[in-house]
Length: 66
Image 1: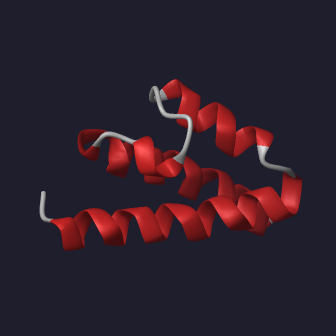
Image 2: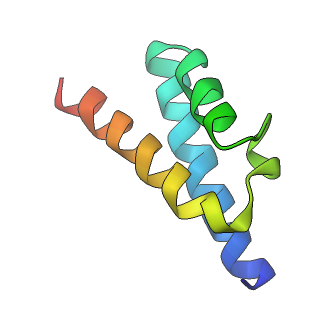
């Protein structure tokens, strides 16, 4: 994975995580990261970035749909 592609995944995850944290708190974000063995977004393995984003994106979509 190129550095640019990784940085794009990270940015998307950060934006989604920020939205979730602002709506319901950071605990959901933290628990999702821990599930993938990361204590911060920067520690997510490149191979897990799309999975982490998918999980967080689904949570954010649920929050937006009310």
